[in-house]
Length: 313
Image (cartoon, rainbow, N blue to C red):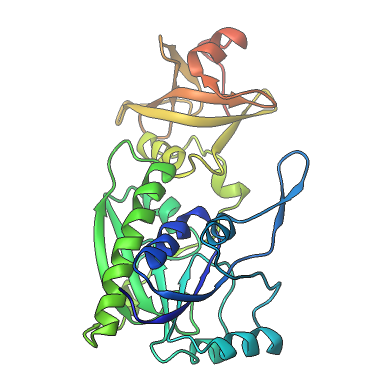
């Protein structure tokens, strides 16, 4: 049973297993801090964050400040006298006076093997860059972006079939395991403290529309990794006849085949269609035409009369 008094700060589904672990291990959770309710769906109704839903299910007190940089919020947390503040994908930077508040510091659970892939989209970028290994790092937070001293790490292989969605689901479970070990070592006074090597640091910058667009002049392997890395959100896309086409699933058809016109359809298969790239060919397997549902690429070929010679942009 954990003896620490904790404040938990997190927002998305990724953070929920860590919160559940704290409850099951008996830690005293003074408050759960999460982002304010946001409009969601076609009706734009206000929706709870996954962390808020979990906290309410456990009858935990929930705080949803628009900003954590106000004196009101600081005083509220100070009154709780937390031994530790645990932060998992919260969504706001913590000011120094909050970082300095708990006796055992602010502990962050990050979805990469730091110092690689600091920042907001580490799972996406690990797959986009073709990494074969990733993992979880816990660290003592400081004022920088994921620059604090590391505590524990655990590695996880990235399988060839992994997408950001599947890897996310494995890492969120691993994150709770590593956090549990971290807190036990902190309580026992045995937690290590390893400074990060700045020379090895890389950043997983925020995704944008330019990131999502397929550049057919890139190699087939790079395009395939982009598709994996952007599935299930925000999804890679290209254009055909001035309309957007989301690409959900692909496979590398040939890594080194000489190509003359990147983006050109060169073969229709039972599963979909084969497209030239900057190096090699790639086969589209699942796509989503503009304003349509997700479908097998073979259905798109029939429904949209795609033929050899069509050019994706």
